Length: 330
Image (cartoon, rainbow, N blue to C red):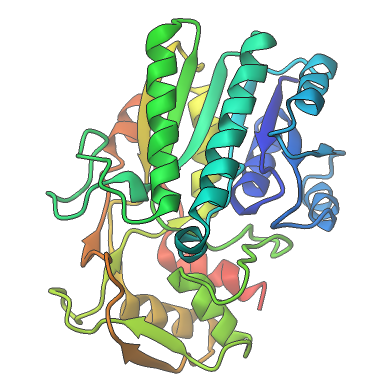
């Protein structure tokens, strides 16, 4: 079995990638410092997959320890999910975000180069795209006018990877731009666990459903949309995880750099998401309107056509199924 290192493998995206990798015959090796996760998640992954999972408690900025792991295990490819991801926190602590997200990437790439491992998938974000441009967003849409340090860190890493690819033809680099991942594995054993008050809609709804927050704050009610609330492209996290495997498997990680959007190509408004959640779970979500957040776009939808054409990837789960899976963690 080919080993695939997952940095941040105990996190939300990384842990679901581990499940998909095992299902498709790969052996994930998890590298995580558990700063935003817990080691008990490893046991839950083993329960889901019925496989023993190798993991290391490591901050990947520690190149000395990272080198030892690359020496111990033959690595076929890396999925790089490690990084801080709270948009609001990034505004308060920009230096911490740049140090962690960019610093960890540089350390990882240096160790990969030393170990002659040249295949990497980078976990990027729709936050790299400029606002106010033609929809749906495509991989060649304008990027760079980021609204927060989190988005800026993703954009800078993308530039680093592009420059690296140009400088050395041995590299096989894939950039995965995520559009609003939601939900959880159907077992309900693993889930997204944001710190404090969530900044993303669905985790916020879940906290309200669990009575951990009194009500949902809906930011803005006069967007130029059918019901006045913002529209986003929500993708089931298992669809996203499967997309990572498809990049490894179907593309055979050919040399060079390629970028893929991962979304459904369909948008849902805030109130529509609330409606579907209530219908599928039977839980009422109280909400109130509040003022718009600075920088929030009215509509953000991607075109996933490139992924369909080049790696034969397409989402399997709709919003209804996503909410049915969420019900299992409530």
